[in-house]
Image 1 (cartoon, rainbow, N blue to C red):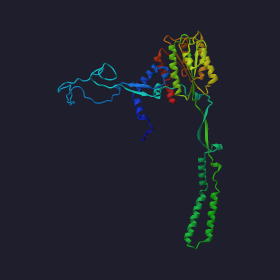
Image 2: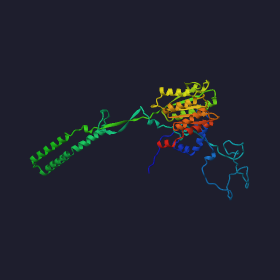
Image 3: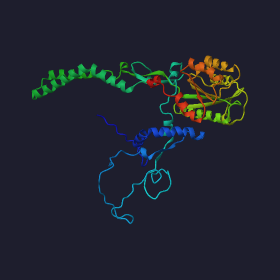
Length: 431
């Protein structure tokens, strides 16, 4: 049996192992607190840590106790309030000292406060995005990629001097010398042993002819061994490297928002919360993330983040203007071969006459092939509008790359986000 001992240093008065065990034990409480925090926080505080409260009743350890009935005796220390034989009432729960600040003040009873602890920013985001996955992260492998990395693929007998593997080459040379000179070395040992034996047995009367012949044989064998090349071209070995496609670590997210007259400030805030969640999610999956903000009414333009959310410009609604601008920006700045491209569009669904069909054709014929995933959220308490019905065709036509959801109020944002990016079964099998 093998044992793994974690000897990583912990912070002062902290144990990472015990903390992880504690977080796993109270996962349900933490997830509920995280979900509430996402819905209730201000937009600028969505990514900070959170204070978690666990009810006192949920952290009690199981223990044995005496049931009702039976007789027993106990000795209490002396006091000024009770006499022998007095009945002491059992402290009541609720507001008379049960803790947690409930009820009115009382003069008896005791209890415990709820347990409160803090989780870090990383722990908070881990719970926010738990069991979620970006769709089609492996899709890029099926495309033509222009970025490659060199991977070591063993040792070969031919190559360039810069890739010479000295250790393997010297090992081969030593083995070759031992094999090629093995017979000569054996004969050399035998000749030396025979010479030594001759000198010992002669006792001063040495056969000079025999001794001279042995010396000559020893000399020839040593010369033969020395003539064995120290390093031969046959011994040389080279490191072999192969080029393999390098998955892109760059992603760009297009945030497309309708700012027509029908979009209220509350609707825009809901869209902003969704966009920020998506940005944080992408940021945890890619090394480099860029965001492109596009606002539109009857015309579309790329804007800064501040203008995207706080500009008061308004007008009619022509959604296709935003999609055309997004497609143009992709062609000019974000090659699908190098970038993972995501798009999120937020609108109340209102659109000008036949423009919804134009949007559907534009996405189906050109845009969807360049994206990893396209998300459309319709924010309205009313019935679905024309844009929803046009996009419904896209959802059935491209179920793996296009998805849309309906949001009524702030409380729907996080559940809708989890529904959109829930890890698919086929993606779990790939990872």
